[in-house]
Figure 1 (tube, helix red, strand yellow):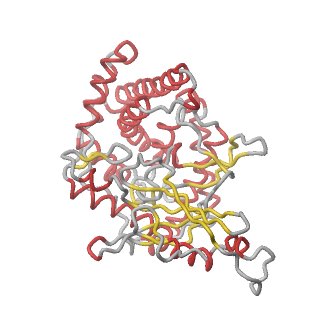
Figure 2 (figure 1 turned 180 degrees about the horizontal axis):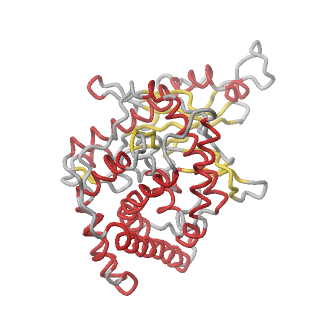
Figure 3 (figure 1 turned 180 degrees about the vertical axis):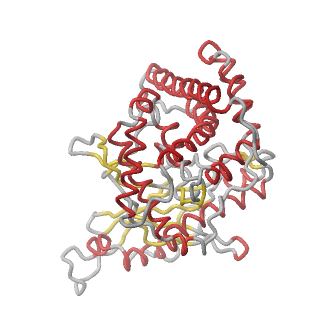
Amino acid sequence: MYNLSNTFISSGKFSYQWVFDILKSKDKDFKKFLYPNNNLNQNEKKIVKVHSFDLSDGKGCFSEVLKVIFTASDGSSYHTILKIPGSSHFEDAINKSLSVDDSGNVFKTCEEMRDSIVKMHNRECDFYNKVKFVDCPLPKVFKAVQWQPEKNAYGCILMKDLGKKGKMQNISESLTLGQIMSVIEIISKLHSFSIKNMERIQTYDMSFPLTNNDLDKIIKKNVKTLSAKYGYLFGDLFQNVLPFISTEKFAKYVNEMSFVNYNLPALLNHGDIWTNNIYFKVDENDCITNEVCAMLDWQLLHLGNPTSDIARFLMISVNADIRHQYYDAIFDHYYNVLSKELGDIPVPFSLENFKECYQFSQLFQTYQLILMVSIFTNNIPDENGKSNINRKYREDILLLRLKHALEDSVKIIEKNFKNFEYDF
């Protein structure tokens, strides 16, 4: 028998024995792997080899998502996923004068960044251990352990490997209407769950886990780069939009006050719904379908503006032609599902007010889109050594997505907010 107790995963925070024991007690498929005939009286398979590797190939500075593999004496193997906040690069990252997380969020101090990563991991643990919203496709989580640096207690999330059941769509490929409706339905159900369970949810800390988040420095740099490289495409769009959407007051209003002014309740937000956090099921031909296999990464879960998730999802993941063509259908679907899920409980806001408030969230997520497009146009993977022509095509799509979002912003500001005044 392989000595699992003295063999550690990655940087040594968790042993293979720890993973083995949890899987043996909580994962039915792992038990079947150990006892093929479901006979617990037969001899357990001997584990002769264990190994793991980082699915992000070491590029993630703030978490490791590891595939952990157990190989038995008969040559069969079983794999699971272990997500550990922090990584082998984490200590280097926190010593930089400017700290930036995997999504481009800028932290003013290294201590602030460390605290935020801890809070985000622990918030995801709270989602699985306390909130327990289950009316949504989720990865099967066997153990979610809080990270407590003050006690030298490391955190992790041990979950089932989704394997070949699903795929993430490439961000440059706009989601289809069917995929959009599937995700909107999940958001509606999350909001219904919030309304039905608000008394319990309010006993948890559901404030936004990122504090003093400052995007201005990096986005100003992004705008300068985009304007220099693609001035022919963007023209004066940045100049026409940024003065309105890039202020601290605007961010505060959108995230803390706008929904109150439109008589919308604070509801649970996933906080980061976009293409890379959605696993879609695949069919027999390994093609992505409309059905969501799992909604991932709940570390930004919080109570807040109920229009935020839809805005982030649509602005980052969907091309403008689809957004515009199906705008009313998307919001009607959201409201209809919410009404159905609430049953005898009346929806506590009108669809009209929801759509009015959404415009502020759309503008705010356009500001975020500048950052996302900058990241992905600089880091589009070269698949299987193919020529750069595919990279250029994907880059063009993302740049057009941003251009159209900025054009929409100009129209919204001119029509509705030209003389807007903050009430604080």
